[in-house]
Image: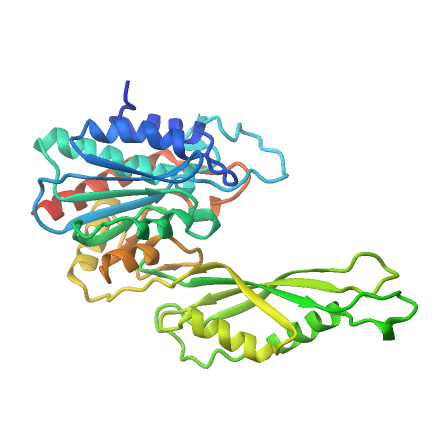
Length: 375
């Protein structure tokens, strides 16, 4: 029997209780369940396998005319961490207003809210406006699933706007910085630690490069929405033992970018800045997200959110990245809003939770946005 899309809390609990911790992800079984549920709404579905046990899911109504409102969310979650949980991490327990479990906020509550909003709309009006649901695998490790969508022919799916259900406590978020994570690999020549002149110390090359990076200039103006780009050295490793000259050393660089910065060009500039003794490779490459705040749909969303929540929504950005910019590369520079019921401060935390009230509130927000799209 397909999953019920009537009760957003029951659905969130089911999603949380389904283990999609990445690695390994294993989103495939949940995709199969959600595919059956979405078919009950009369939607056509497409499952894209990206690895054994891992898949993306797309669903749309082919007979609907006009550009589509696209909702996107990721099915994978981060690992539990070493700290013990008070609540069962895959239990979906509800205590008071809090629904606990890995992924409750990031971002299974948002997925449940949108799917239930679709069910509510279809039940009330008999059919859905032109929509597209994109549920991805592997977002937490660099938007792997979203990037694989480029392998599909999606030319027949005209998308007019993106709703990204990441945790924002139901506030409108209009942008986030991009992420470019680099690994620097330095090589040298090993020798006995008592005769270092016979070797070439790779750690020294790494340290020299890191010191240069402290003076790296992005040479870009301050973005009025996202501010300035940043660079941080996250880890460094090297060496075999204390009495040997190390012939390898590696370090990682976390760069957060703003709109207008080409990641390919930036990687080249960073490489030129640190010199030829270190080779760079990218492990995560996700562009920044920004919007034209004068866009009518952006204004419409902020007004709808204010109507449902009773709170005026100021212009907000978030620190984390999303699948949104990757999907824009597929569907064009459409307006994209990040809004979901999860608590941003709970994402990736021990004893992660989502507000039950916020989930219900988000169903109302998404339902209102669907009605606006229909009209």
